Image (cartoon, rainbow, N blue to C red):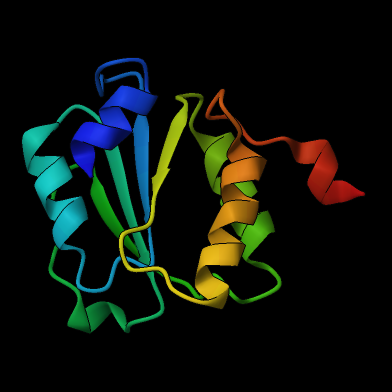
Length: 122
């Protein structure tokens, strides 16, 4: 998954990126990414209570959020606005409606890794 993300990011994941792992479960992918790429910001997002997810140090973070919550796109957009680095969104554990919601977020972020705010405000 990280190799595919690197390819989509232009060949490598660099300190110029942030990684957002949607529906991360217990966040194994995020943990591996943060260890392998300590200079990028890594965010694991899942609706599991934070105490069930591993403890993160450094730039890896866990956010207890439900991507099906109607307020999630705005929360994601605000999160992306906090950090000027392009975002790489990944979703290893998406099925059914979660896949469709992730596609909406991928469109929001687009090929530039920055959110298209206007489409979410209309």
